[in-house]
Amino acid sequence: MIATVASTALLMGLVGGSHCLAMCSAPCGALIGQGGGGMASTAGGDAQPQATPQTVQWVPRGGVIRRAVAFHAGRLAGYAVAGGLAAWAMDSLAWVTQQTVALRPAWTLMHVAVMAWGLMMVIQARQPLWVEQAGRTVWARVRPLVSAPGGVLVAGGLWALMPCGLLYSALLVAALSGGPLEGALSMALFGLGSGVWLVGGPLVWIRLKAGVNAKRADWGTRIAGGLLCAVASWALWMDLIYKPSLWCR
Image (cartoon, rainbow, N blue to C red; front, side):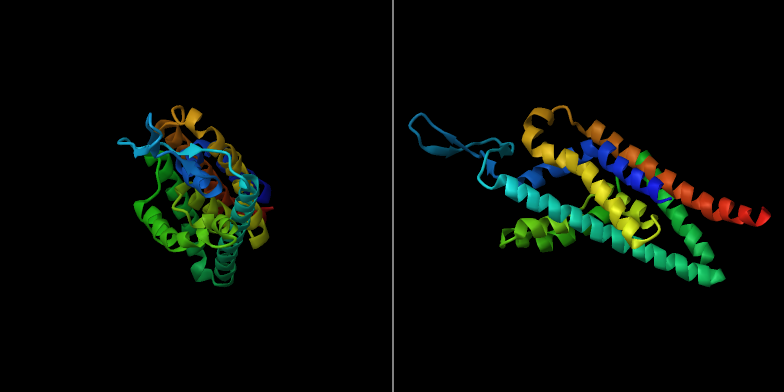
């Protein structure tokens, strides 16, 4: 089970990379590097504000590598903690339902809800709006911490609070992993998979943004939803078919 969940989390990070690149590359690069542009030099050398919006320009800056390492280290740690907590909460619910027969249907309904969540992602290629709005509200309160000493590391650790539907779906997968350590490992693998895109994203965003359109990002979300359905189906099969079949052997 842990191998299935861990590989699913890693694949969600990899196949959902276009979604990560489109949605998180700009804020990630703004935290790590330095945004340029917004001013144009005239022939006389005076800076004048440009009338049209400027794209984010990724420019070399001292300490960028150090900031990138701190950010992604904090991001992986934050993902692991979130995954461990999600798995612990789900594992606690599983223990309670095993001890109380009347609550066992709640455990099954939880898997059904996860499957429905994944199906919605497959069909609509997005998350519920209330999920993203809640994430934005939380992130607006922690954003000022970025400017403080060690803020980049803290921002990486709090990246799990970003309003990202793909991230929340990975947390649902981690919750089904079977324990806090397994959940932390699953989310760390998801962070590694998505990190491949986030590390390279700020460096090649201008060149690739024309190719990473909304359609490709939508397909990444749909694939992630399909993987979420697969994990929920596996959990339902284990609980409803496999475990009862052991009594017949």
